[in-house]
Amino acid sequence: MKKKLGLMLASVLAAGAILSACSKDSSTDGSGADGDKPYEIKWYTIGTPQKDTDKVFEEVNKYTKEKINATVKMTQIDWGDWDQKSQVMINSGESFDIIFTNGTAYVQNAQKGAFLAVDDLLEKEGKALKDVINPDLLEGNKVDGKLYGIPANKEVARQDVYTFNKRLADEYGFDLSKVKTLQDLEPMLKTIKENEPGITPMATFKAPLRYDYVVNNEMPFAFPFEGDTDKVINPFDTDDAMQQYKTMRKYYQAGYLKEDAATSKDSWPMDVENWFVRMGGSQPYADLLWSRSAKYEVVSVPSEEPTIINDSVSGSIQAISATSKNPEKAMEFLTLLNTDPYLRNLVDKGIEGTHYKKDDDGTIEDLPARIDGYNMPSYSLGNHFILDLYKDDPKDKWEKFKEFNASAVKAPSLGFKFNSDPVRSELAAITNISQEFYPALATGSVDPEEYLPKFNEKLKEAGLEKVLTEIQKQFDDWKGSQQ
Image (cartoon, rainbow, N blue to C red):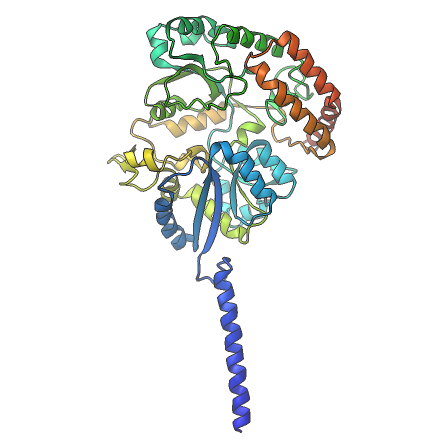
């Protein structure tokens, strides 16, 4: 009897040990499967690391633990290091949950399996996102029929603008309403050069060529917005390219750009008042945002009509890594981040009373601690339409965003994603050639009448026609599948 009792006791103890080990495993593997220990979401995103991130995410984690039984470890990688470090991390197979991505990097990493297709998750954990995110963003970011990330709900169109230092424009009485083209800038640049020795007339500036680029605007593959919009061309082999680059050459020789414009890594931060005009993508009331950041007024005029292209819908995406141990929990967090105003503002603006204050009417004002310790890039973090308005924001700001989106024209190639695998070696060679020629031509640093033909000849030698043929074939197949 004693022997039987001893065996029974041993069995119970062994079973208890096994159960204890299982419990221990489930509470330490980070899965949160036991419903007790929160799952820690590892999130990598772009931007200069902020000194108050840990303080803010203490508050974030109190909230997410209560809402979805998860905590978040957010790591920022600085702007200049982002491309290289994020890609090395992806290529190494590091285990993490969410990563910021955009443009060509998003497409290529999706195609090679680095990101998880989220279509099924959108029907379950992310169902609420379908009610808040613009359908053009969801459809426009599909790769081979599947969605591989959650786009930030913001402006969907691209509209490049010329942005001016308003103080200088007012001082010299410039009529900015007359600026429509690159050539229209010349008399103003001349005046600034002659009268403002401490000001560079043009911040690092590359001549605009308006096309829908398949890879990026430094590569020779694009669809026109006029004429045969279904035919891929080399935009550098056009009269438009020669005209724009000749203008930039004239400006460069006149000293309107810095001598090292082609190679400079200077990002021309807006809060340094050492420039007169610059060019970049805009959105409704962007001048107010830029002026607030710069601490002086800037004013912009459009260089083109708003158009929805592949680059404009893929400017800010949070992808779930294929290495995530709990993609369902990652999607729960992204859903909460994009639908819950409290969390969205906390992640973006910091802690109320510490980093910003809220006025009686619900608008906010930055406190010094936000500028010094938690100055985040809003565009990269998620849904704009649930962000609190600043005190000096127009009350109709988000309505204007919706009107801007509704007014934009869709490019014929919107939704087409090129698979570069069949021409990988040609693309590598063409990339090297573009990196050699494009910056110098687009900044006017070399004579386009001499160097543009050389550029195009080298592109042909590297297999340009083969790549254009492959793109056209894939586009025609894609276009046929849309009908």
